[in-house]
Image (cartoon, rainbow, N blue to C red; front, side, top):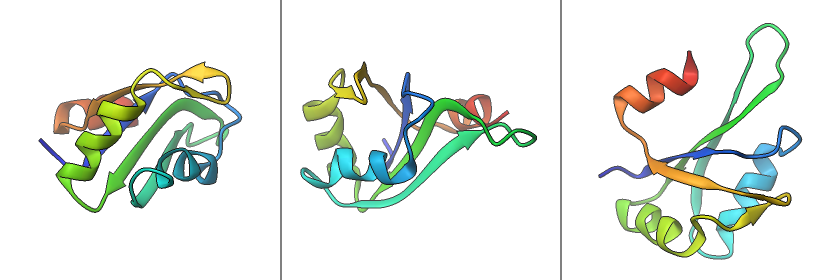
Length: 89
């Protein structure tokens, strides 16, 4: 397991601050990276979130998986090298 999660199905209008606020009432967030198109800077509806610990990431999944962020249910996966490569390409 890792201290990073990949969030999918987030609204294109969600900012990194919105993602951080989504988690901070439960666990501290170390970093949020919104995955965007390198030419248009438009969001792909995916974010990579880093937490202080694996425990914090696990608690976030347990408590927030499937809950709404900007009126869309968020899907979370633990980040793996393969998943990170696929969402960033």
